[in-house]
Amino acid sequence: MIDHGRPVLAVDIGGTKLAAALVGPDGTVLRRQETPTPAAPPGAPEVVGAALAGLLRAVVAGDGRDGEDGEDVGNGGNGGNAAPAAVGVASAGPLDVAAGTVSPVNIPAWRGFPVLDLVAEAVPGAPALLLGDAVAAAAGEQWRGAGRDSAAMIGIVVSTGIGGGLVLGGTPYPGPTGNAGHIGHIVADPAGEPCPCGATGCVETMASGPAMVRWARGQGWPGADARELTAAARAGDPVALAAVDRAAGALACGIVTVAVLCDLDLAVIGGGVAAAGEVLFAPLRRAVATRAHLGYVRRLRVVPAALGRDAGLVGAARAALGAPAGSAG
Image 1: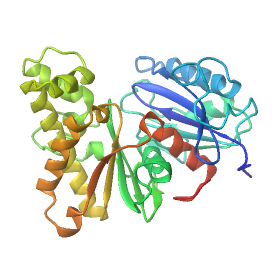
Image 2: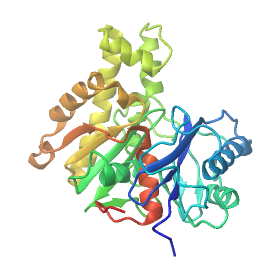
Image 3: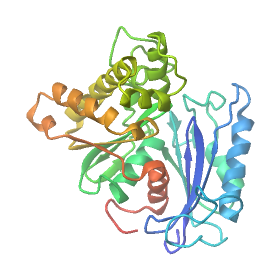
Image 4: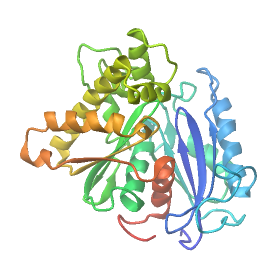
């Protein structure tokens, strides 16, 4: 039985960063740390595993730097050093919820990796639950962020990859295997580039941060990363603007496809690339409006995430707590 008066440990695993936080029953982030995801070749899962285990132990113990400046984050204190009541683990996918394993496309060292076994060893005695990172981000935004007024939404993480999570009828919908909402692998261009998932022309091959940079560099743009690219687009660089427009079109294709199928009223966009602001959101809204022909789809709104880098952590905490949609804890 989970003690709903105690904080839970929330974990967010992605190709770029590993993050963990103690989160209070009301969704307040009490203590948070993150570390870059180590580069590890296939066959060396222990490299990433050791980094994650160390991060979890540090957050539970209160060791190391919290937030950006070494102070406790949030308004609820530091959560103490007691063991968390439960652990919610959000991971990039694909994943197997029943087996407790993950095979993130952007972490090649992890294929069928038993992440819940690792969590049980690092944080003994706390029940753990696994869900997709984008499902967690959507749940977090619907609980405490930009989706509080929506009963049918998709939360999308645009970063190293592109993930999506659905909230239907006010409840997160992970699907039977935990992989529902995987918008990054909807095919936007059947004649496009091969995708690491094995398909061709997926949204992720055009709209992720690395994909945008790869295309722009192929057009002669000299920059190195997505942050530089979006800054160049804001400054009016034509190649950078074209790369963002191309990405917005692919992402809009995925959003409208899901909205047609699931009767959505909201798309909440987060992740590192989404931090670009209106340089991404303006062409994205135009592209969605161009493709939204059916009346019920035209009501769809596209908004930025409100919780920033904490969305997945808040959603993972919600799952660990078993908090109902829209509740206070």
